[in-house]
Image 1 (cartoon, rainbow, N blue to C red):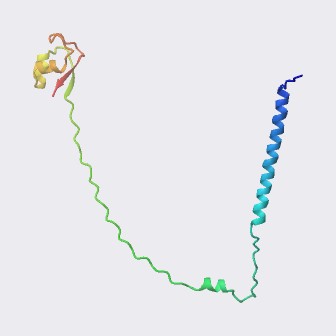
Image 2: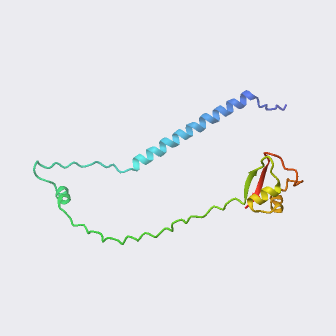
Length: 145
């Protein structure tokens, strides 16, 4: 007769818990062994105390109290500062156009004569003006310089 082994969730948890406990135990034992080994091999050092009678300096104190000469370092040359160029004033370009607001009774010819330019130059600077004879009071016109 043949029997089948079935793995149940409860059995898996039991096996997992057992493996976890065994692994943790091995880890702790390893730490203890490692720490014990290091402590056993470390040399034991005991500081020795020396007592000197009052008023009698020990050898180390005498050695540190003796003045020693220290070589004075030679001064090094300080580099001269380099001159920084001063900024020059750059003139700001004047605008290419002057804006004029059309007044009552103005014509392009009258405005051109007033500013010393041609009507064609004003029309070139203002491509939105389709009909030179129809300008409106309050309209802004660019006058070329």
